[in-house]
Length: 216
Ligand code: ADP
Ligand code: ADP
Ligand code: ZN
Image (cartoon, rainbow, N blue to C red; front, side):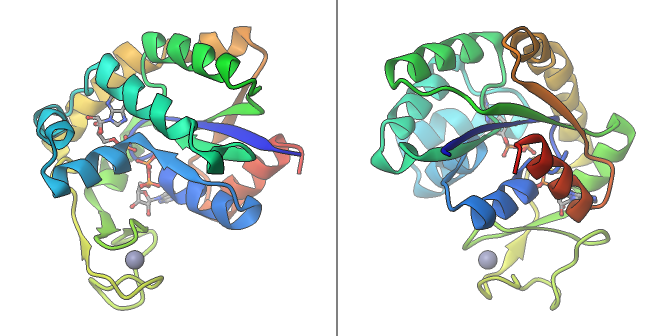
């Protein structure tokens, strides 16, 4: 059975962490709009220039840009047998656009999995996050440290702290989430696709809950 999974949840909830586990479990691609924007910023492309200012401020990149890159990505052949969409959609407009794109591709979403974590815990998660420059693996200085400080367990790459993972910018990102992304819950509830997972549990338990709500 092909799996077409949406991972929703506020910044720092554990979407990227769980997506990496789902990739290993199901062998389907992980599509993260945040990772795509960070790659564009690093390459210094036009897209990267446009995205950088929004990301640094903790605001969303405009819908028309974001929808365009996702539309292109979902048409690639590796998405035909499933995907994990992480961090998209984040606005009602993006969710409506995604419905249209999937319809054109004759894809039916399997589930919209919302990783729910109280906002009081999210700032600590983001501020302590360290990410591998090379493969994108996420660590946490306290909750999930790499074996050697500053070095990725998976690939030996160097880990760094994202510029937007400051306490200050996180406050903006959380209020953007409340205002613009939370309304998507009812979008997916109405579609009968919504599952809320308790993301405050330890990572392996969160993963077990996700796979069980996917029916596997
Ligand atoms: P997190 O998972 O911690 O929320 P992401 O890596 O998903 O962070 O996103 C980082 C930033 O990239 C966001 O704050 C936003 O500026 C931009 N971004 C990512 N996904 C989207 C999206 N779907 N729509 C608009 N902006 C996005
Ligand atoms: P998102 O992609 O939703 O922004 P990440 O997967 O990058 O979130 O996780 C944010 C931070 O929280 C990372 O440092 C990660 O190691 C840590 N983290 C993820 N899941 C958990 C968990 N269940 N318990 C504690 N820390 C976690
Ligand atoms: Zn790595």
